[in-house]
Structure formats: C-alpha cells, structure tokens
Image (cartoon, rainbow, N blue to C red; front, side):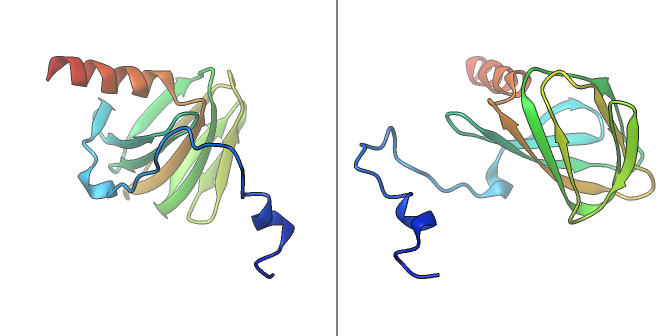
Length: 137
C-alpha cells in the first residue's frame, strides 16, 4: 500500500467537518449500570455508540431486542451468547452480529468477561441513561 492507495485517498474530502474529533481514556468514562454484574463505559458519537462492557462472573443478561444494530467483540474472558435460537460461547477473537429487533441474551460462568459493543444508531437506552445522569447533576 502506498499513500495514493484508493482506500485512503477516498478518506480525503473537500467537505467541512461537522465537529472536531476527540480522544477518550476508557478508564475515565463513568460507568453506566442497568443491572448488577454488568458495567457499561459508553463512548457516544454522532451516529455510533461503542461501549466497553465488564461482566462479573455468573452474570445473566435476559433475552431482549432493540431497534439498533449491534456488533459484539469479546476482548477478555468468555461469554455465552444467544442470538435468536442459536447459542455459542464467545472468546477473544469472536464476534456476534445482531440485526435490529433480533432477540439476544448472554451469560458468564466462573470468570469475568470484557466485551466491546458497537451500536448503530447509538443505543437509545444508554443515551437516555447518560442524559438522565446529566440532568441530575
């Protein structure tokens, strides 16, 4: 690859940026928790939300569905993940792709797990929790 590679050249644009970029230290992100044993550290962009999630051992996330598309990457540990009627054990290097409105669930066993979730558009429940926190402050 060279600096003139079409992949990177396509990234150049004569359009004005819509906003400035930013850097985020994951450890500085305040935790959002919807249930005991599962902590979210969300980073919210304009059209994408990425959340660094930490599961405690023996955490069960019940079946649910949402309008946002979700892609889950396991970073450390393992998590049993169900999408629709199929269940698999996910470990580092494995990914789950969950289309909008598809039921899914997860659970850890004897060890913790760290996963990275990407949501498009940003997951409404997480954005709402962040907004409620800001209003309370």
